[in-house]
Length: 279
Image 1 (cartoon, rainbow, N blue to C red):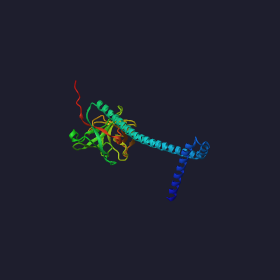
Image 2: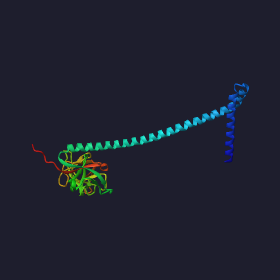
Image 3: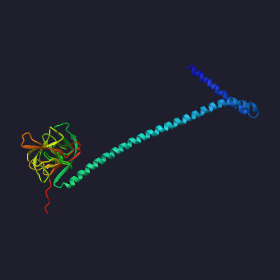
Image 4: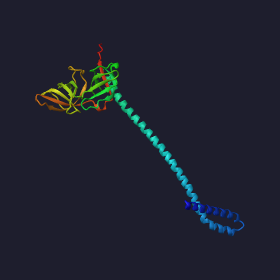
């Protein structure tokens, strides 16, 4: 600290001396040209040093100011970028929602045979075998137990519990679900029972098919309306494999559901059938 104080004093004295010499040289420039030239020769190195020092200080000041400006601009750009990302996220979500709702609206417009009520999925059963979900429509909205639940893709399941403003839906994937079904292909029309498949939870199984039943890979399966709670004509899925039953008299068809159960966000509850308008 003492060395720093001494150095400061020396620099101050040197600066004062140079300043006085410059003032004196300026006064003697006209009266004593020789002394003026001598002073200029002596002071030139100092003038160079102090000019360079002043220029460096000015350059450093400008650099620091530019750096601060760049930092502020960078912060502003970061904030704008974050805001734009949020806007893009909202627009993407709105576009996805509009696409789903448009598909549901078209389905509802074309499906004139049933009365339907739209509902949003607000909860899911975390279990792997007891597949169910919760919707935001209940007894106060006219929802009753055993009402079928569908989307524009196909059959989802049916209502098993009803509360004031919500209802619980058992998915067709559930091991306890079953639906009377038939092959849509006109040349076949084979009938059976579609149920959840615990051995392969991602697939449905159509059982009670006679060994000689005309069922092939690629066939579309729909509800048959033969008993049960589901009306005829609801799409269930597509046959991906046909295997013989252990007993040898029957066979099973493995079906990939038409509904993507992992992406359900909105559904329709079929509340009744429309009465045909007589001419």
